[in-house]
Amino acid sequence: MKKHVIIFEARGGSDKGVYGFRKDSKPIIDSFKKLGWTAEIIFYTDKDRGEIYCYTKEKADAYISRVNPGNLPSEVGYFQMLKELVANGVEGLPHPDAMVAYGAKNAVEKLKGTPIVPDDVYTYYDFESLKENFPKTLKNGVRVLKQNRGSTGEGIWRVEVIDADKYKKLKAIPLDAKLKLTEAKDNHTEEKTLQEFLEFCIQYLDGENGMLLDMPFLERIKEGEIRVLMLRDKVVNVVHKKPAEGKDSFSATLFSGAKYRYDSPDKWPELVEMVRKSIPLIQSRLGNYDLPLIWTADFILDTDKKTGKDKYVLGEINASCVGFSTHLELSDNIADEVLNLLDAEEAVNKRWAAFTK
Image (cartoon, rainbow, N blue to C red; front, side, top):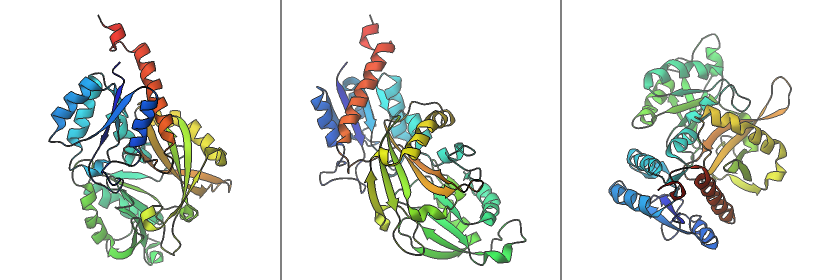
């Protein structure tokens, strides 16, 4: 083994420190050093893709992807390179296909009808299906529409029909109905007709991986969103994200004024147990890939209509560039996990030197 790991990053974005690196990548390098390994950060660009590929293939046993796809002009070249690296013996953390499967908004839709996602969830890949179905789902009550790209709440809209009682006898909300729209980015509100909003949403459907997720708005988001931070199949941290005070506030992002509280997993035993039991189901529904190295699952409290008891509803999974800057000590766990994975791979995979002649 080469005993070297490469961490991929992208330049730009709000997650960078004064030197342009993610604040929580350097601690990972330090943790590898303590174990007798080396690691380095490489900034990916399409222009340098060939050189980066050759260097990584020659030098590294594994890569850790810490790139927010939103920071790249296009994701195509990056994912092609990662697939080639995996195909040529570099361990992918995560595998590019797993990154797509877990990180795309339609991951939630693929889990609908399970104990953690309701049936009333839809995805749209073109304007025709959006225009056909969204007026019908909007008839059921307040909705949340999420774009596949973006971050920090950008392009996540709470959609509420103004004077909804006027349309009680209709099967769908008419296109001239007025909507009250609140964006999670900063909790600002605006009004549009349904037709105007649908046309506005075309931007989220254009281009590579254009998609919209349509799901019911859960009122108990006011009590906070609960983010479970995972190191593969282990819950390592729980973040309670309470939206800012205000009538229209529902965003759980720091930018919008939400307050974060960081808890150890033992303070959320029911949620942790539910996540643990759900992992096989999540894996099977999302393509049976190995679990990402670092990923998160965001839950919102709801009330079970049959029992009146609390239940947790999955709102989103993140697997592309999950940060842990508030708990840098997790870098030691990450380095340990990577080496355990590589040791297991070496023991069973014939591509390693021990099996070649």
